[in-house]
Image (cartoon, rainbow, N blue to C red; front, top):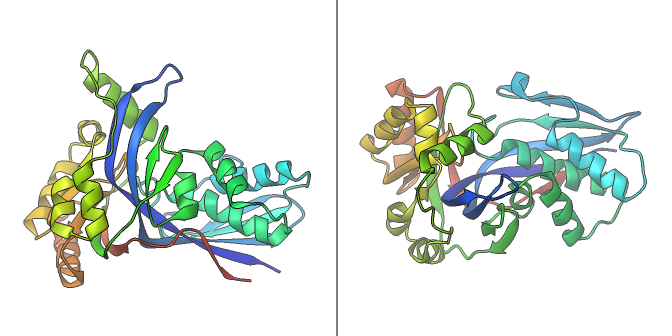
Length: 299
């Protein structure tokens, strides 16, 4: 028997970042949207915990116990007093190290798959608690849709979305370290009064009404200056996307993937082709939002 779970990528349509806390983390107002790019995680009984991976950039995915999928399986097994003997295969389609929560998605997918495989019967609250212990983005990968994340981003409030939004994601060569981007944020804001993060009423209104133009005007990522400081070439990608007809563009999370909001599916294809032709990114992918969270699709 094996269990396969499909789990989505995310885009941060707002990422408001507060000053560094004493524990080194930052308070956030993080508006997540799940998008229709997916990884699939398959759990199969095995003699020991083992991770394999296939798909684009699979060679960049760690196959040891640092992988969030492995950590998720171990955490669930420990809670229920069983041995985490499972083979987890990750079929990647979410860009690796791209600021789209691919690793977090794999953790959430593995958690749901192992719960079904082992029959642990974990409640939704228990799964979310384990997710929060794994990382700030993992709870949202489990629930999907749209949500406001506060605290480190792990405390979720579901948000209403009144329509479908069309996106283009420009995938850069190489990754950006999330800790390095936050460190650069701290350097750039040193000596300034960093406001407490809060969700934008205009942005929440745009999501609720499904107004693409209003959402384009409200997109914001407080980490973008830090990501551009560490990877100045991203500015050319952002310019290429907006020049090609995107309503707005921003760095996705800590980057280096850049996200472009467009008015419809046809424009998405046009912008994606222009981004690839510009030579400012490795490839470009189209997607829609919102998308469902981690979902069992095969047994």
